[in-house]
Structure formats: structure tokens, C-alpha cells
Image 1: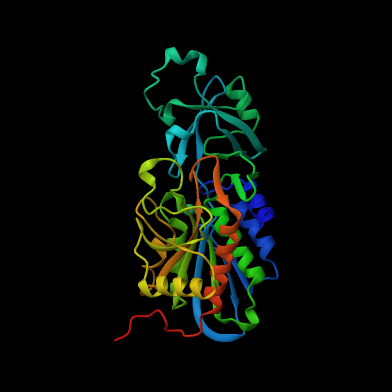
Image 2: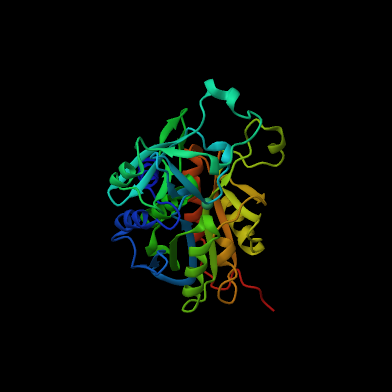
Length: 357
Ligand SMILES: [Zn+2]
């Protein structure tokens, strides 16, 4: 799992530039799924049928990551940038980035005034990203362009996955390559000879800009399929650090995956939430209930597609989300796969989650 996540997060896949990530996932799933296609917006859609009849299940994890794009090449060779996804300007200065250009990756750092020159700055103010810039070592705009940099190029964090302590991983883009890794693991480990139904999984694009890829995929798939249940697999911010206001009813690292109940994008279908919690209990998998209005997930676009799909989600707790250095715990990753697999293997009844009159 660590190897898989390390490789997945090493691929730059900023908003609208997810194609290299999709190619990697395609290669990992060759021979493990029955169908594979990529749609017009760039979503990778795969499916696998079990040996037994049963429900049609829709799963989603987003392949994009929070990042930036080049908005201006200054005459001095520094780059200005626009945000792609929910970034916090306080987290940006001095962070390493990589720009995906036609000539290959160009490395840089988000520049800002040095500590020695603090007296020339307003130390109380948070510097807006528009006042920051990227230093790629170019001395002129011409040199930057010779290096391959062009307007619109995607910029992502350049922080490789490393071990933190004995069981935690530090890196970027866990949101949501961690979810992609979980889906890949599921296809590699689930015993489809005993599975009832068909699994459709969408590796979505453009989640960080409004759940756009998931909306396109769910609407299009719902024209041909009457999905019985859907789950979005994503990360969710842990609230177990020292900031006092975060400590009430917070999600913690190491306490297992969360079962989504409510976020800013949707309220989960109660029958799906209860089933996930029941399956976790029966299989001895720790899990946490998740109510947090500070985020949204692909599920928010999926549940209102077609005639409406019973939907919830499973999330992996992550510290410092949407920064260059996120932290997840190894056991939470494995238990997310365990919970997803146990949930899928528990399905038999097509109508289990439907409202009935
Ligand atoms: Zn996410």
C-alpha cells in the first residue's frame, strides 16, 4: 500500500491535468477489471461483474489534487499563479512545487521575503497568494519559456512520501490519491467469484473545483444503470492536533476510517450509513462517524444523479489537508480497504437501500 500511494502521489495530477494519473491507474488495473473507458472530461471508468447476481454499485475517488496554474511569467523569470482548489495562503510560502510543462517537470519554490527582511513587511498580515511568486531559477521570461513553462501549466506540490514515526506517512495529494489507492487495492483483493452484483468505479477529475467530474460521470452512467448504492472514498481532515477548538467530537488518526453522515455537499442516506456501521462492527473494523461541514466530496454530485442514488462515503483521516504536507496513518488506510471490501461482500439484495412504500 505504501508503495502504491508513494507512486500515485509522485505523479503530478493537478486540476484538469489528471491524465497521467489515469494512465498509471489504467496500468495497475489491467486484467483486474472487465471494462475500462475514459470519458470526455477525463474520468476513468472501470467495472467488474461478480459471479452472482446482485446490486449495481457505484464507487468514486478523485484523481486530481489541490494545486495551482501558471497565470503570468514575469520579465524577471518569476512566475505568478492562480489557485486550483481550496488553498490557504498561510500555508504557501517557501513550499517546493513542480510545474508540469511540455518539456517535462520544472521544479521551483514559492518565494517570499526572508526572515532577515521582516521589518520591511507587515508581519501581522497574511500574505495573499497574489503577492507570492514561484522561483524556478530563471533569470528572464525568455529563459522560463525555454525551460518549457507556458501559461496554464499545472503546478503541484513537490513533497515525496516519507515515513513519519513508526506508522504514519507524510506527503502531498493524499487527498485523494489515498482514495484511488484504496479502490485499486479493492479490485486486487476482493473475491469476485463470491461477489453479488457489479462494481463500477470512477476515478474522477476536477473534484477540487466543484465535484465536476463526478457529476458528469454519474449523470452519464445513470442513463444506462439504476445504481442501488454509491460510495465516495476520500480523505477527511483529522481534528486531533493541539488546536483547542478542534478537539470536540473530532476525527482522529489511528481510529479507523470514517463513515460519512453529513458534510457541506450532501447528507448521506441513513440506510447506507447504518449498513456500513453494522458491517464494521461485525468484522471488527474500527470506524468513526463523520459530520463536518467544512468539506464536500464526490458523493455530493452522485446522490442526485439519475432518479437519486442511496449514497454515503468512507473517508481516511488526514492531518493538514490541502497543504504540501499531509499525514495519514497506515492502519487507517488498510482498514478503509477492509471496510470497503466487507461492505461489498455483504451485498446481495438489490433493493436493500431503497425507500419502500
Ligand atoms: Zn478530496
